[in-house]
Image (cartoon, rainbow, N blue to C red; front, side, top):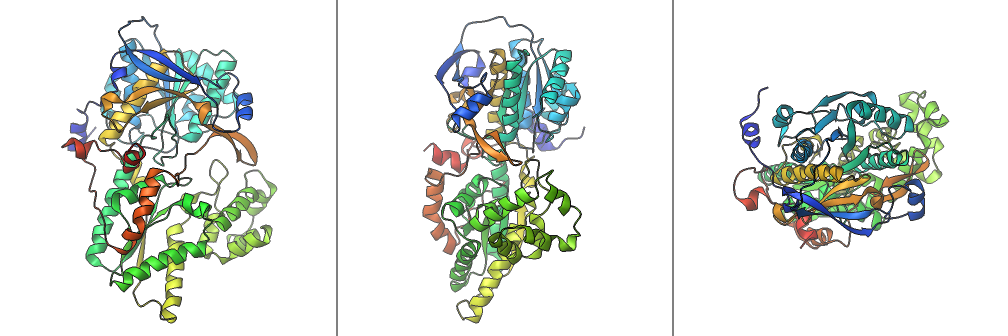
Length: 550
């Protein structure tokens, strides 16, 4: 297999580990936990894995002989930089515990677990993928592990392979499924443990024990480089406004982090839009005001960052989307009827089925946006927000607002805009040193959780703004992060997404600077990820983590 010069050198990199994981470990158990909300409902659904204690690993000189353990690993959901290092960490951790231990990778995500499609991950295979981006070592998938028939089939496959534990590497939904699987296997005494690892570039899987989901650091650095390049071009050409949509459907962590790294003229934060109940017209007016102020200084250019999910946080749009999700929910008679409506008539057909207020909003949207809102739902029954061209919608509406202002002689500048969407560009990048270390530690830590008989836990590595040697390894019960939410028209237990906290240090710092950044051209150009060189450049953490732990 041909590899690049960088990949060849990166293969030599040995990720750093917390001190506790460099030796044998002993467990320090903390207090019993409870779910973040809906405690009674969650406890009823997870009687065997609810209320488990927090776990911290500490170094130990005690050598305990361990039986042979085989572990299966699943990559679930969208890609995130560092996934291969999680698997490398699991592998190395297992082999250190007992060289006879084996690691099996289920192919194509959770579907491979059910269909018994797997491969044994040997040292030769693992070594090819160390410190590389992507999930191609075994592939990923979006099959949901929700049915007992799937659990039973997976158990049969585990028994055939002698698998004692399964590690699921995924986001909030994947780890919710891991928790459901752990509860079921515990209830029937299956003898198979289930451990999760926190993955998502969106950064919305976090709490006091999970400081960051892996991949967030690398993805934000990739996007920040691209934004910085565009800023440099804008400041050189001085004639375009760039509207850049960034991944982050439910939370604006990526947009906020990229803003902290690059200092754009405009950055919308979905959570603030919701808190202030800002209307679409108010957002448009805000952006138009910034464009106008910069034009007064002769600067008819700028950069605006737009979280992909912002449209769902605008009150009237949130209500509209909620109605659309119910109307077009999979299996409903309205969804079936809609599938037979001619494409040219679909907007009118849907508008007639909505409440009067939502119908007015729906009809006011450009035809292209209205059509995008009626596209096939995602696996959770929701609008596929990434397919909605929010950046184009805002460009069109800002342009219309500025045209009116020009007629009223309130705007004398020029407005020419270009749109971008940065998403897939960041999902499979070679992991930064931080993510390479963090992911390897998460995997190694998962092996320690398995060897200590734990199930229903998520691998946790904390104190990550300190040198890696001082990181704190342990586990957090997955039920601790759960609440009840409406999915497909039913209330279901899910891990609560961590949104941008408006009273948190990262947002407060951003809010204190944005008016200044709006008018001035204070662009910062981060440049590409550096893998070799000074520690302060190569091992730097996100601005979000710095501020949160300041």
